[in-house]
Image (cartoon, rainbow, N blue to C red; front, side, top):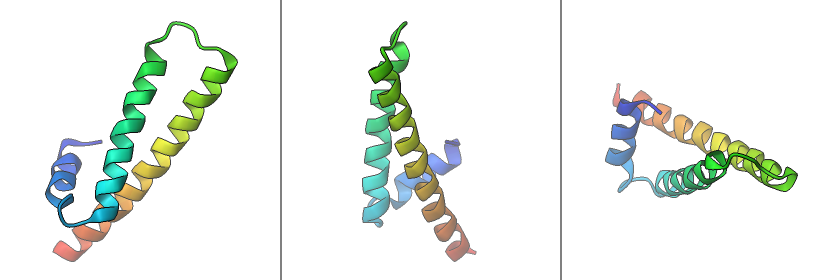
Amino acid sequence: MEENDIELIHKLLPKDEELRRLWAEHLELEKKLDQYNKKHYLTNQEELKRKEIQKLKLAGKDRIEEILSKYRRQAR
């Protein structure tokens, strides 16, 4: 995520409950993904879990982008 997006997120967190929830979830998924990525070898089950986390993180990021776009349109 770009720096200006992160700045906007931090500005909007107190105002938007959904964004706050999605951002917390995004950060948690990022931590979990980092744990898997640090391993030199993943079992099949761990690889499936890593891919599931990636999908969840991407879906959340897409929703965050939608929310940010809405706020940017309103600011014009």
